Image (cartoon, rainbow, N blue to C red; front, top):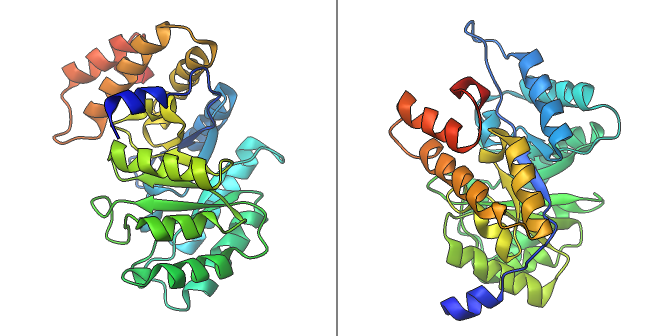
Length: 288
């Protein structure tokens, strides 16, 4: 892999499939700000992005089963009957068989008309590729559309970056239509894309790299927490890429600058946020 070969792999004017991992807002009294949440979902949909709920940005690891189902219900009520959305199937620390736990979560998600995405579990860490794939295959059997999730352990202890054999075996499962990749390593993601292109071209790789949002140039779609901050700006950036408009670069740079601030410690000062707002064309921080 060289810079020359990477440049050759860019896919100009590609239409991007875009998903925003919605933030779950809370009021000062500790209750979920349901109306604000639903309004944001609707705004994201109107901007042209699909919503993903009960993700890490939605604090899924802190929600109980009733709360996760509330989120699904609020989302369906906000978006209407036939609007698709993605929802996390999170089973960590739940007692029981992995396959049964996944299917229980997926039944609820599909029952709300959503697409399940399977969070990884520590119960499968260390297992060989064929055994992991067999568990995923059994869990997904009979569902029409499932997404997998490859989450770097720096984000959560239940995450892991799969080896190449595991990744390829998961691509062989017809119910799994794509995978979110969150290693924050461009080269690893590029290797995933190359393997996808050679093995199953219709399989979608959704970048989860908030520090490398231009991975769309190389064939990744996206499922990003950053996109929920400014969905209309992400939609505009994507349209610029699809139409070959060089204004793409300035907007992409501004969004990446925002991502570099938002996803690194320490918490940014107000002046930095104001600069982010200015670069994105907003009049004030509150518009972000």
